[in-house]
Image (cartoon, rainbow, N blue to C red; front, side):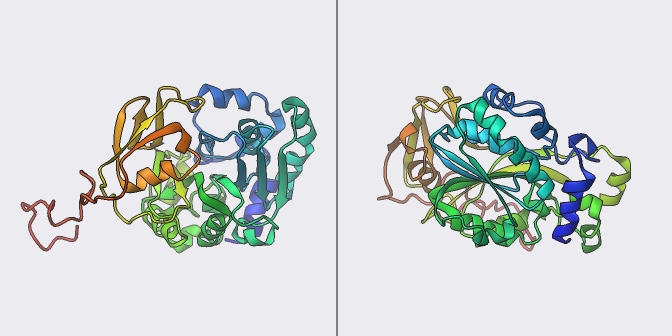
Length: 346
């Protein structure tokens, strides 16, 4: 699919969220109160031109420099601007002039409402981030909301994001994924592509792309099945299934391919704003404040070598290795179920 087709769909065909034909590019109503609070401070025209599929507002953003890939009319940019505060910075990138016109038209309105102006917008392709004059290794966090599936070169987007992140920075983003590789003919359907479906990556290909770009050990934060709720389009995508998923990818040296056990643990201090009782790193690491939480070496690094470090106490080091972290050794011959007959694929 060409850039021009996507630009036309989001710049001319869609004039607001109500024009979408499926529920793929939408965010469920359930969201934290602090997110509702920042969204309530955003101009109505910006809100009505929103086409995301998740919440891309991770914790610990005060003072951070954030990049939004495919920012559209700027809803997430203006929300993040409030979360990073006057000492932070949010940069939005989008290829669609009509969307950026909306974002820029209300920049002064938001600056007056917030009491500071800490945003900027660039027109360009997210596959060509190196052409936008952005400083390599300068961003703490990169977000994207239901845009990677629209990209013509997804591997290039991930490579560019890795290049722009600081060591210890993260890419935190939501997107649509398919349960299998999308057939070539379906990928040429402009409506299905514009609705964030036929450009979706097969989820396992995404994991390979992320690791190839340098993001070892991708972490799934949340996901929800997409029901489409448009009979005509459902018939055109059958038998594929789609899900909206949020991942976090860290730029960290030394992450290992498997969860290795070094006898380590962490204690969450409960000091992150909006998370006094527990911190959720991903869908299987929810750490209650004050409780010792055993972790693998990779999880340790994701907390100790990132912006989260000051919010945790750390127990142990990497001096002694105990093998695969318990419960994570499906490939280990020491944990293989001997009752399974040999010769099977998996």
